[in-house]
Length: 291
Image: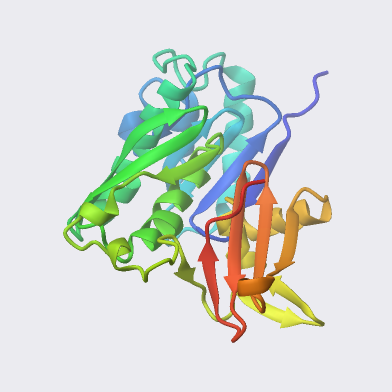
């Protein structure tokens, strides 16, 4: 008798309407695929079965991860069991859970198509209300380079749009993304925020929320809820990775002209985050140093 299929549900602290269902093996040897409605399910038995569950709004599959996005009114406590049962049933009875029309995995080209589809379905409708648009410039080695246009180009809120909106949406859906890079020429936009940075200041420096970093027993502590999203994780996964020793952190104190400053760096996999704390306690998010 074969062992039962193991499914691990992973909630997202950044997006309460999204949950990943991680399997032991790939759903199908196919490119990442996103189903944004029941009409798009086509001949994909897995998508059809999941859309048959009341409250399921979208289904994304990438490798061994099935990401389900629910309606805001639905509750995960009522959805998790039928979703797990549907996944098990389809994978045990179907040879092509995603259908026969889905293209085979072809690396970066497939990832680029999937990224653009997710952007057009979940990010751009909201961004368009502010006169902006986000598109894919290129994908290479799992590194996604995106470009903002319209009202997003040069907008002072573009960093928040990228990190708290676009990046969160893409990472919850396509976990094989290694890095997301903004290649927009913000200085040439109609509202060039970055060109107004003080002389000598990093154009990527951003103030941190007051509760993002605390000082306890002589050490600086970064809020897990804040740091998790910066490293592309949810809070529970971040804590587990810290316990397992897979999150590297460093605290450096400045010397000479930088005396009194402290730089905090955190790394996980191919991602990194850094902040600089001034002598007066104010903190800004800065580009992380090279590994």
